[in-house]
Image (tube, rainbow, N blue to C red; front, side, top):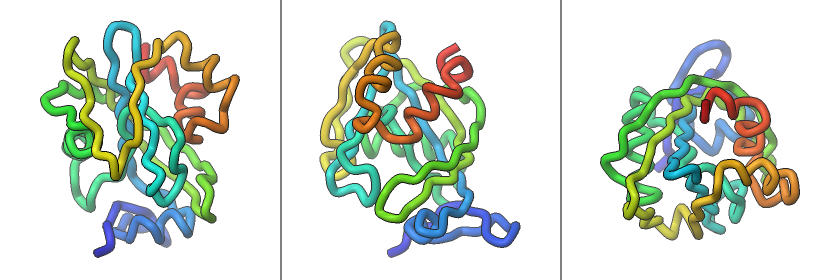
Length: 171
């Protein structure tokens, strides 16, 4: 069954198939969450079965809300589904827009609600292997240098967030 996400087509916001939205490069709604703890940020390595950017490192959670689903509800739902993280308090940090080629002839043109959360000591992710192949807590101060050294290992959106929106996200 097609997953319908909010996307703009011919000037109207409509429920459209997620894969088709990415193939056509349509502007659409998205959610990104950064989970932090003690100066570290949680990264996930996308499962190899993902339809775009498989095996690349991303922030804790990146997803699309269902049609008419509030962004905060989506963020909490996907943190639980992808990483087994429940009960974190989400803080909305703002909204950004970007456009990036993500391979396989697909384009992300997203209007993204950005959230942050703090994970308590001892709460570790329990990733769904269909979504996430690995996780890592990386010192936030080290992330820009890691991305600069090996940009091909990171998703385009994480590179964009760090280059253009770090102060809004982490400030």
